[in-house]
Image 1 (cartoon, rainbow, N blue to C red):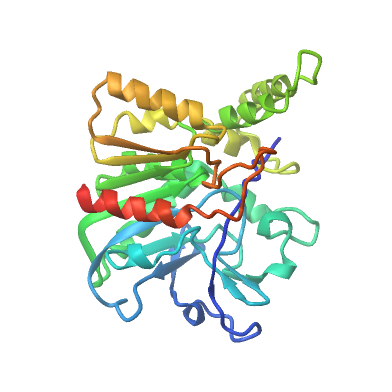
Image 2: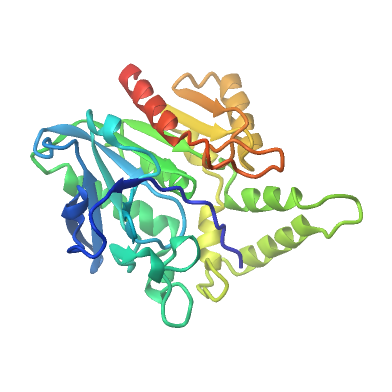
Length: 333
């Protein structure tokens, strides 16, 4: 049982003094709570300053993996909840992001585990989170929340953008297939062949020579175990088998059925890059003109370029450029 631990990038956007009243409004967000199957779901809305009541379309952002609080507080303030500066996008749209199930909305970063994950007293992810950390749960929950938000006076229904990065791209693509309300999809940093292929590809990179440990073979054997136990909900070692099985269904099966405009973004040094290249070639062959592909040469999963040691160069931040490209595409679509 493996959990993909992907680098999360955050920008410090709010410099309120540490220790102030911990409410989302203090950090520039509108906080709504929606009841889904008896679960309280935190919704944060990012609007342009002074325009939260101005009617605009909704851009619904699906975050990646891991049980992280949406608002993480450090010594200098709060880390941004989006991986990019949302100011340009918020000039045209209200941006929504949803909290992970049974994970606090706000936490001090010093109390969190690796990769800003929220862990319980036993040092593991909360059981109630793991029970719900499933593709189908997120898709159905998010569609209901969109329907709820579209009833707000300040949401325009003439356009609905769903965007997702990494694990969120899989969620977003299935949402776009299931909901006729979605007019545009942004598929970022995903693997159209499913999660297990990213795991295997990453382990292939660790196989140095013919005598090296067969890392990828272990992952293939792990996948055989997942398939044989695909409803198992044991989360002792990270994601449950049921979660891995659902997220490993190839999203290309959802994407190829879409008729709406779709933007596919990926770094060419990401482990998923060959599969995005395949989808690009295949969709050209099938004349799927509703797709646009944007590759970021020499960058990894979160659009950082790689150093000579094949490590992400965190001094060069490309996420704002990526978000600006999203806005350019939306203006043209």
